Image (cartoon, rainbow over all chains, first blue to last red; front, side):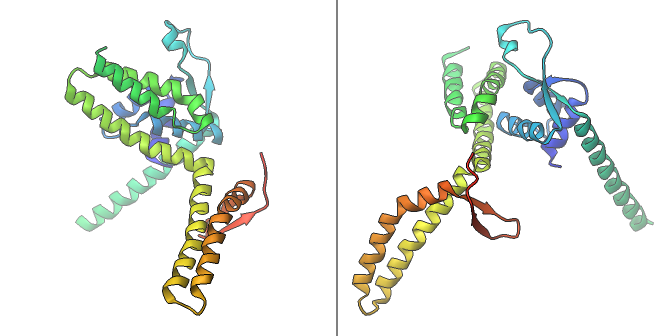
Length: 106
Length: 144
């Protein structure tokens, strides 16, 4: 799972979001280290939709015509499972790295 | 929004129209809205320059990725490679001055020129399959 895919799925665990909100969330979650451009973001969303990890949903009632043109996306159960598996994999890597470092220090 | 902002937005909109059909239609409007929101936050020329540099980098990479995904770019690259190979054979024949090489060179170059449309059409009708093992082969067409 690429960092972009991981962080997009992570941003969507908080509920349905439109693209710009996902971008802002990713920037916030990574302290500005990962800044997804629009092309990268929508390319990632497009692939996630095709893989069944994300689906498009109706957004809340739009306050302006500008908001009405935005699409909202929600993580699917498959997407949540894939994210959980990735988090578990990353945790295992960190645990292994910590164990090795502790052993090296001792 | 200043004139510079409007010009930048128009240029960005122009670039987003370069995305392949389906992707451009589906996400083009959202991309422009997102860029307009980022643009509205730019108060200095330095902010604007930074935004433009980032957006151009992102667009270049994602344009290549999306076109690659359509297979059209792949077809063009392989058609170009096939065509260039024929030209190179002609050049090699001429350079080595084989007996009758000049006549053969003319034949090969004529073939290269005449075969170009044929190669393009064949590649278009057939799907060029790239295997993960690193070689490519021509498969029977699965026309959409």
